[in-house]
Amino acid sequence: MIVTSQVHARIAGMSVLLVTHESSAKHVSPPGHPERPERLDAAIDGVLGAGVDIVRRHALAVDRGLLERVHSSEFIEEIRAFCSRGGGAIDDDTYAVAASYEAAIHAAGAGPAAVDSILAGNYDGAFVAMRPPGHHAEESLAMGFCLFNNVAITATYLTLLGNRVAVVDWDVHHGNGTQNTFLDNPDVLYVSIHQSPFYPGTGLISDTGVGKGRGMTVNIPLPAGTKSTTYLGSFGRVVVPIVEQFSPDWILVSNGYDAHRLDPIGGLMLESADYGVLTGWAASQVTGGRIITMLEGGYDLDAISESSSATTVGLARPVGPDWWPNDMLSATAEVSDRVVETMREFWKFR
Image 1 (cartoon, helix red, strand yellow):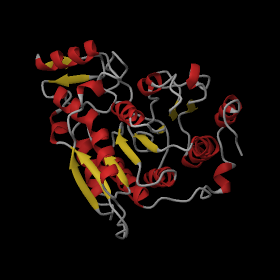
Image 2 (cartoon, one colour):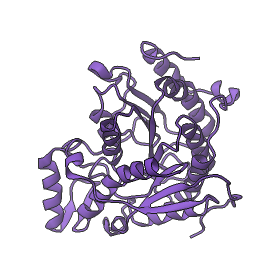
Image 3 (cartoon, helix red, strand yellow):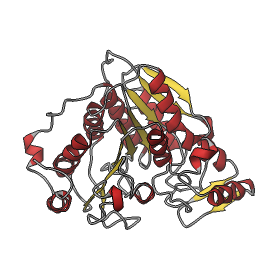
Image 4 (cartoon, helix red, strand yellow):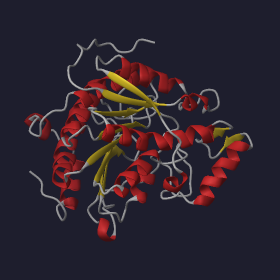
């Protein structure tokens, strides 16, 4: 397929780490299911066509002890046994085959492998291109195409190393599993900007965390049809000041391309270039390339490829803290005003 409609001049500097594993291609769903192996090919094509120096690394299988910090041992064994019997339908949306357990433990191990590589080398950041996706997976529940929660596992790994982590989720669906993993954790900021009402029906503005984690959960539920400028304005109004104040050591992105206007499932209206804008800002918030984008949703192949290319350019070309245009700040959705009022208890806003 065509990698992208844009040809990027090669960007001088370091390089972007691309973490993949061949097991992802062996995780298949029934014919016509949107979460298919071709999604991964499209993402990798986009990364490789971005005009950025790319270093590839194979994902490692996740450490079982780390996996058990996010998922119950009983659930892990249920998924392993289910796949060993040949798999099938877990629910109406989520499927597995015999090879899916191998794919899932490598998808779960890809983020920690990226962390180790960034700490050991000089990279602008990492793009994790793995399947199955993860942000819907709960402690003891696979759902929404997800088996294990890849981004939550990576965030947990980073907190064990003593880091403060911001998880920024711009998949069109709310990441219920990630939110619930860190509801009471003051070292993990979870921010989701998503379509609502929409699957899985979570991600309310009033969900702000519990206990020591109060204020560390931020939800921006946007209506279907939200256009690019309004989306970016809401992001600038809410996400930018909160992440800047949190001052994370690492940023993890639940990188869903289903908020793209071409996506057959989602109803938001982002353009491919917007993912470069969002990623470029996120990359500017950390030092030493400590940003990892992890593939979640996105089901139009051309949109995935073009958006992955833009994301990779954003990793290699961070933008400064004052970059957000004023016209975008004034084009915020009404919902962002309600988010700001709810979160003023915890954060300052411009």
